[in-house]
Image (cartoon, rainbow, N blue to C red):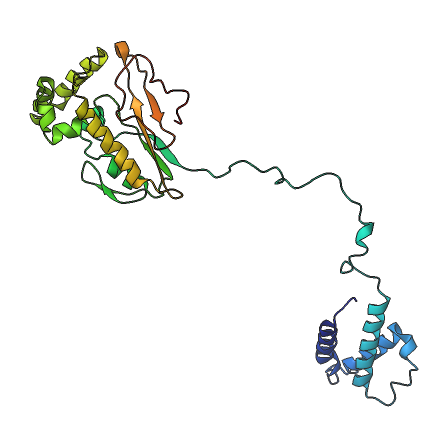
Length: 295
């Protein structure tokens, strides 16, 4: 059907209210209803001599004629888009048009940082960085932290993941100096760099450390417990802040080798919670990971 009955009723009623039920015009012309009546008889002449009109008023004549003409039009018009037709007549398509049928790859982008140094890196820690892995993860997750210079800071948009990739060599040396670690002070070299920093000469202490690194001569090689203790703190911080589905704290470090001043630095990131109990020291070749290792 071309029109529904509510639409038809509203159309007729609205038209009559606006045009038919009006009195004579100010210019002397006959009422609008008279002109409409004549026009309708011209459009629908088969109603002119209809006995159903009887002695009705001109307005009622118009109403009847309007209804008759609209119904006649409705029944005479061919079916439109509302009629779906015979589904079997629709030609089947062999080509697949949907772009998502073979959609089997990840499409979500996660933002993070794969190379963050904290005070646990000797270069950063000796020159003023006082924030450790815990603060780094809290900052990445959108929390407010106080910077090394005393300024409160917060990310506009939190990160989805973070790798605290401190230098593996003598990791945590700067915090040990800051806290005057007893085990560090038991070593001759450790006391020397400690005293330089406390005397206000971190540059001199860093130079001492850098010379030993260039020579690939680890000054704390005989004191593995120092490095192990700091590495355990790094991994513990990652485990504390890791929130599956919300925030990923990846465990890693920066393999820092500079033979002859050449920069061979690489970030080592572990796939899951399997990592070495101690971070590797400076070597001339990257650390080897066993083929059967999940990392």
